[in-house]
Length: 227
Image 1: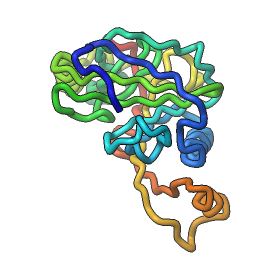
Image 2: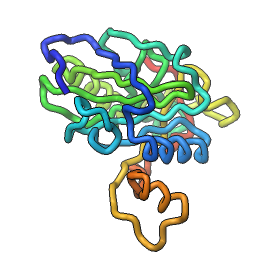
Image 3: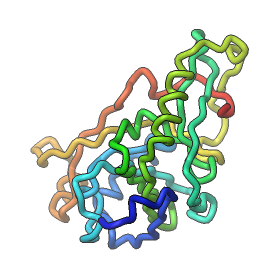
Image 4: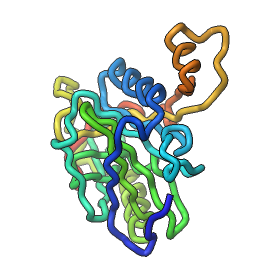
C-alpha cells in the first residue's frame, strides 16, 4: 500500500465490498450483532483485504458498526485526539480512548498499541451500507498523546466516582464507544467448526478464534464524557 507518510493528515479510502474478504467481514459483522455492542477486531491487512494494493502484513483494526450508516460517521482529515472516560470503577480510574472521526467513534488506545514513528494505523470501518479505510499516520505527537492519557487514566479522580452507566442506552448511539476489543487469531478449519464456518472456509473465508485482548477492561461499568 502506497501513501505519503510525510502527510500528517488522515487519508480515507472508500472501498467496495469486493475489496475485502467478504466471508471474513460477514463473520465479524455477525459476531458484533450477536454481541449487541460496537466491537473492534485486530487482524492483519492481508487477512481482511483482497485488493492488491491493500494486502500487506500490517496490523489492521476492523470496527464493526452494524445498523450504523456511513453518512452518520463522516471522515475527517484531522489527527485524532485522546481522551479519558471514567465512572463506576471504585478506584476512580478510567480508560483512555482515541477520538476517531471527529469524536464520533471512541476506540480504546491499547487496541492500536505502540507503533514506530513514520508508520501508520489502518482502521477499517464496516458500516451497514458500506466499507471505508482510514489510514492514520502514527506520528510522535499522536503516540505521546495516547501515552499521556493512558497514564492519566490510571490516576484516581474521586469526583467521577458517582458516575455510572445503567446500560439502558443504545450502544450504537453517537458518540459510539467501543468497549469490546477482540483479537482475531487465524487458524485452519477443524471438525468442530459448525456448518457456516465450514462453508466460509470453502469460500476462502478465514475461520477464526476470538478472545478479549484485555478481559479486565472489556466492559467498564460506567463512563463519563472524555476530558
